[in-house]
Image (cartoon, rainbow, N blue to C red; front, top):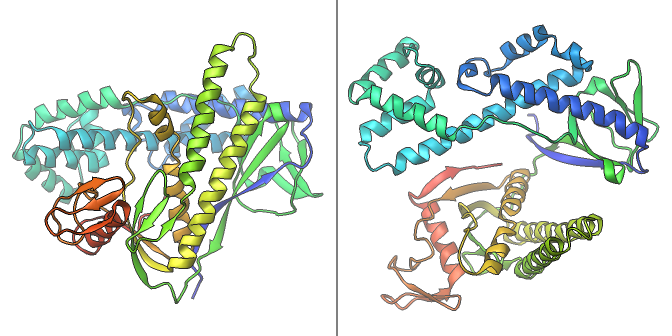
Length: 442
């Protein structure tokens, strides 16, 4: 039986500074890569090209016939990678647009359930969505066409179609990038040898050599990130690693996440108690440096020391997060973890210092690393509904109050640490009917 594997990203770095002439050649590729992406964004990012971006070979053929590659003098291996990279971005942008519109539909109190069902149907069925936006008759396969007819018959379809078109015009964004700091590279455009990597450039049969800090060799599509000011590069390589299955990982655990303590379990175990200290120190330093920079910008525009220290502080913070996540998995030995979807940092308010600290909260990084580690260790992650979860008593379900980090139930008298009470509620909802997503991964 083949071993299950998951993908993780490995980084490689240059051992010696990249020569300025070599860096300029790599930057030429990155600049052409940027131009191709912007060309695809502008030409295929709108509603008229919805039928072409899935799966994308129509775009590939049209781009081949356009002669744009010959105009740039760009190697084909980079040209087609840039096309599909841009198509991936366009698809993601359409997904974000649909998610935003779906949220607005749910919040619109003027719609009946039939109206909402009809609009959700259009968002879900790509062909119908495309034809409505392009003012065409909806023509679908027989089974789906019958279903569309039943749904449309119960509503004012013309009115709802106009609403959908209006929301797409309002919220869909055509992409554009001004950054030329990297490019994807296929296996036939590079070669590992001599403790480094040879990278193809725009000159025929010429390659740039970069000495690396390790002797690892990969056979997959890579991504080359350029740092011209530091005369360095970073190579990102996707690697499939074997999933580890632990026979002793049997517990079902509810967890509560926080700004000051990273994780609290339903049994009251805490992981990442120093997270708040690290984050406040990092946020306060960023805030102070921004104030100093804005005050003295005309006199001292340099940011080299700032970027170096910022990077060190981020690495320290991320190292601590990974260390505590590893300890959590090692000590708790979970089979299933129940979590609430992490809230977004709240903008605005009177206390700018607190708002700035919340903006620096590493919530996205914590979630990404936890999900990746759980996937590698065969731990299931279940996302549950979070409405009023911190206000409910985990003992009797009544609404209680919070005082100085402690939860107190006025009905049954139950007292507990606030985060522990929340984690117990998370577990109860996960084992009941409050599940949103099961087995979620980044």
